[in-house]
Image (cartoon, rainbow, N blue to C red; front, side, top):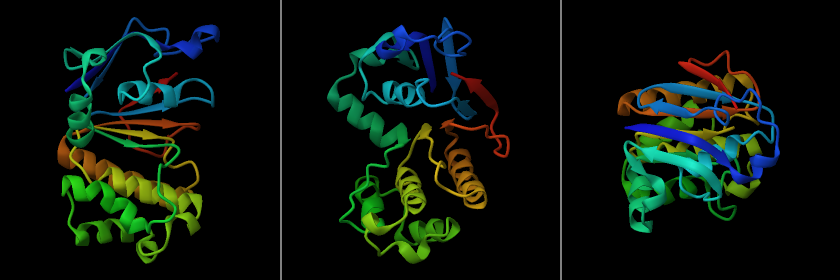
Length: 214
């Protein structure tokens, strides 16, 4: 699958200076499945908006977005449900966790639908990310960095052609960020999936194929 952007720009950015952007100033941008992309920029440049448009939860944009050769503007709610279950997975910057549920219960909300991972598989991933001892704790009492790792695990509990990761390491220290990135990279490689990762900072320590400015 390819993701293709044609003269795309979210409407709020029309009044801003986007000079030099490798995305908002481009006639066409293509993301290829199996490749890893890092989109680096300060706050306010539209990183989150880009992923939200591709994921179909933001409609206020000019231009067109295609999954393969299908314009997402024509997708029905039923089609989007299937796409978000089987094709696109999203690590939200805002995490979207339920504070009153345990970390494991938050992860299982996704996994109970997809049945993509076994409980043992989830526990092993949690150990790798250093949160194995926190799975039975309420998400609301975890640190933001721990919550980010819970959100990462939840997003990996489904099949996908692309993983959209929105500043998912912003509150995780360097060593744990690298551990989390290695897990994400392995899951993407196992599924032959693409990764589109946004970050406030340079991701030189991470093995991505293409770095872009927005």
